[in-house]
Image (cartoon, rainbow, N blue to C red; front, side):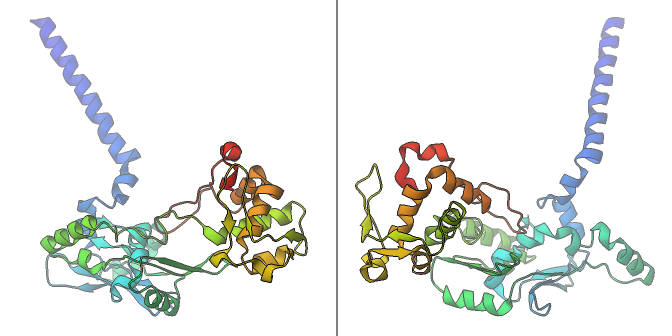
Length: 334
């Protein structure tokens, strides 16, 4: 009998140790992850007591997202005045499905929980002001974003405008898109219906084509090829053969220019600068395959950020370039 009691006691001690360790793990090591998890509904409901900060365009005037007071159990309703226009930038703020986009990336500031906001929070509490978050100003140009939406109307396409001097994103729009107001309403049944409808759509409107999808770079990759050529001895005025088409090794599929045209009116040779200016496919294919080769081209691509970690405020699919040895038996892939 005493042996059974002793074993039972040891079992209880072991269970207590496991429980103690788990509680300490949750409170010490996993606390930040749990607190910042966009699916943490308990925290999310607490956030609805706070007037969430605005998300603004670069002019600090155009409102992308804001909160207004309600008379319901949830004190504030998140609204998106422009509907679909900025959806893939702001993301959504939903009582059921949490946060995405900038709403998630800067949640600590928008909800007033960031350590940097502690002095302001103390002042607000002393003065009896309502709880409020901080607003954030984006780099998005409201005029350019409007033009992007208008130009892509009805097209399954994406557009990104960037300042090459700073890397600032001035416009980012993609179709199909969605209206985040449908996910921000406090009507949970309506939110669920909207969510189901968006996720059932084969076009995947919740996924941004401008940031989360990977596409062949097309002629934009000529920037990488041209840079590699200059790094490896070519000059802007270097002369390059200019045939009407080009068949790389190990294939019978010829590469031609856009529309089947012969670059530069059929000149036998053109300069690197000319080939770049008119985006000559044939010339750049010859440079990639015959002058550079896989190792130099891949090295230059990686210098441009391919295969690297790119910091982004919104969900972002990073560009990938296969390693050079992959091209050994597949040279035309250049």
